[in-house]
Structures are given as structure tokens and as C-alpha cells.
Length: 566
Image 1: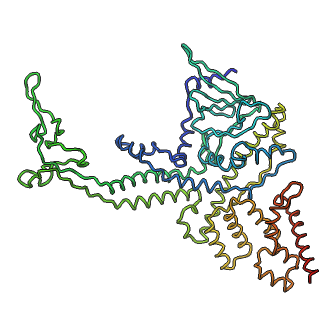
Image 2: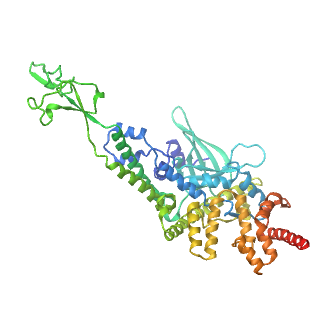
Image 3: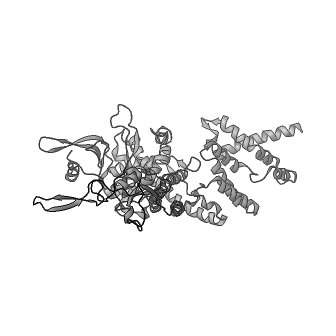
């Protein structure tokens, strides 16, 4: 392969990543990974000594890492098997099985997406996601495609037609083109460096098998993407810097500085601080005493104090005014520590402001005292923010990745490259991804539900709040949540208490069949979920009509047996 001259020049010169792209990711990773933000301290304290900087670095505490983790955890809950629907076209069973069950990492590609995919979206907006074989050296069968995240600090060159990234090995690069993937490395000869291009995989797609992770298009700067949570960074940076100042203040409070009041005269210079000598012409010259460093006082162990002060340099300290002590005297320096609680409040405020910047005030403890109206208002903005992330995650990342997997599973084995566009459209699923979210805490949901019931809110409002509370309580419990959805959909008396149902039955407000179905439905659904299947399909995955027919038949059986006994 003839490597293009501009790529050759980059590799032979040992070219590195685009610093602007790498820095955009680093600004987030400082808080996501707890990395020491040296650039922040150099900017904030440009004249401090090197030893002070090293002390800050060695004692650094990433106090914003937990705040980032809360946001990532909240975002990762926007999708679950209960509110995401993938409708696969006929004939796509192999792709569906690979995406949902047979993906080599995390058990399924969906699991991978909700963990590593979301983290890449938050921390690597300018990184690269490459859809490529799990290994470039496989024997027999189909290659197993995976999505690999390449951090922005390894992206050297990127256009719509070629991408060059560094590998983990020094001097090695991976080069993606419209038709091939190559490994480029340099070999040093006797006089010049040589470039070796090793073919890894010929895909013949006609477009790159990789794409930029991306972010909110509204924030696109033309050359790089900002993270979808970049609005948090200024507040987190402030919290990190203030926390360093706070730790220094607390350290000074616990280990206060003191000064050493010196009185003994230096034996070398006789208390003058200077020594006398003759130059080459026998002329007298004076220079500072090397024993007392020019202070005129006898030196003591540096462990005695932080500062050394001559008594005769202090007011009232001259001879005849105040008798000099015979031993060094330690005197602690009084400091004003009133700034400590101020700094603590400011740090907490900065972290709350970071939550607010991405409409996630509910992650802070303060909004717990907000009114119901304020919470409802915040919830609207939170939903809008999460809906934006959901759209990027599924339309930009998920569908592009699955499209690449379809290529490896259907096109590459048959080498029918000209049919790729048709095949991709034939097998891609229709994604009904969530646009509304119930990620508030159970306490918040329960409080709102109680208020709604006490104030006589409409049944629709109570039902919506109940759904939110159930979603919080059963998050991650797919079967339990699916059972709840079936009961809610098929129970003809869902919103009534047992006493209300009995009253309706006695007054002719409902049929006996509806009453039997409503009373027994939760237990019947739970039992059927564990025992019933049809044509190899478990009960929870039946259509709603099939589930209703099965449950209605059980209600008929109970009604008939009750009638015969009576």
C-alpha cells in the first residue's frame, strides 16, 4: 500500500494527538477519573514555589469525582428493558441475537452501551468509536465485531475519509480508510526511518468503519464537540481549587505555624552577621556569615519553628529595653480561620450549581425542601436534557454501531459489498427509545403521590405518579416491572381499592367476571410468568391480546366453579 504523504510524514515524525481535542476530554476526566488537574493550579497559583505545587499534587483529593458519578449513574438509568423497544425486521434473527445476547462484552451490546457507551459520550466527545473485528486474526467462522472506544488523546488525524490513531505501543498507529484498516509502524534503519504498513482488514465499505463519539450538535464548535455535561466543568473546577485552599487552611489550623525568637549571638561573627577578610590586594572586604546566614544569632535546628525572628529586630527588643532570653522562645502565629466554613459552603454551592447546570438539581440534598411546583418545573427541564442524551445515544451511537455489525454478519461473509446499503436497511431495528424519564428518588415520588391524593388530584395524575414510584422501586427488576405493566393494562378495576371493588360488585357497578379478574390478576400474572410458555415464548413476551385471553379464561373457570358450588 502506498501510504499518503501527509500520513507518512505524521508517522515518521512521531506525531501526537490534537491537543485541543484531547484537552476537551481531559477537562471532564479530571472529575470523572479524579486526575490531578495541574493546569488548573498553574493558572490559579502561577507564582507558588515548586515544592508547594508538589505538596498539592501529593495530597490532592478528587472531591468532585462523586458528583460526576452521581450524574453518570442518573443518566445510565434513562434506559432499561422496560422502556426501550427494539422492533427487528424479519430475517434479522442473527443480528438481534448478537446485539441482545451474544455480544462478546458485558453479555449484550445493550449492556455495553448503557455502561461504556454512556461514559464515552460523557467523557470522550471527540474520541473515536471503531466497529471492527474483536481480533484481526481469527480462524474459521465469522469474525465477531465489537465497538472499540479510542480516547481523544490518541486521535492524531481525523477527516471524513481517513482516521489515524496511536496504539498502546510506542511508535505504532492504526490507520482507517474507506476500504481498509492498516497498522503503521516505523523501523529505524542505518540512516533513515522507514514506514511499514501492515494490512489488518479489508472491509470495502466505501466509508469509514469508525465515527466520532460526538455530543450535542448545538454545542459543536466546528472542529470539536463539547461534552453534553461540559456546563458542569467550571463549577467543578472551582470546587476543586477551593477544596485545595480549604485543606491548606485546615492543615494550618491543626498544625499551626510558629516563629522562633532567637537571642544567642553567633560565635562565628560575634553577632554582627558579617565576616571580614582581605582581597588579593590586601584590602578589607566584608561578606555575610555563612553560619548564621547573616542573622547574627546562633543557628538552631530547623525543627524548632517555621520562622526565625531576631528579638532585637522587634519593637522593644533592643538591648536595654527588654532582657534577652537565654534560650530560643517559640511563639505561635495567630491566624484567622473564619474562612474555613466560608470555603466549605462555597464548595458545596459549586457542586450544587454543577447539578443545576445540567438540570439535575434532584441529585443535591437542597431541592428536597422545594415546593411541588418547583419540582415539577425542574422535572420538565431534566426530561428535556435526558431526552437529548437519549437521542444522541441511540440515533448516533447505537444505530451506527449496529449498522456496522450488520455488515460483518451479513455482507462480509458473502463478500457482497455492493449490497451493503440494502442489507443494512433490511436488518436494522426500529428503535423506540425513551423520551420521558422517572429518575427522581423514591422519596420524591412518594411525597408527590401523597400530596396528590390528599389534595384530590385527578385519577390520571395519581396514576402517573404511581407509575413513577413503581418505576423507581422496581428499577432493574425487569420481570417485576413487566408484571406490573400487564396488571395495569388488563385490570378493569386497576385504580380501585378492594373495598371499592366489593361495593361496585354489590351495586352492580361491575360484572362478576371483572371482579374475579381484578382481584386475582396480580397472582395469576406472577404465576404465569414463571410457568407458562407458548411455542417456546415465555408468558411475559406474549402479545397483550394473548395474555388477556389466557387470564380471562382463568377468570371464566373461577366464575363457573363458583356458580356450580352455589
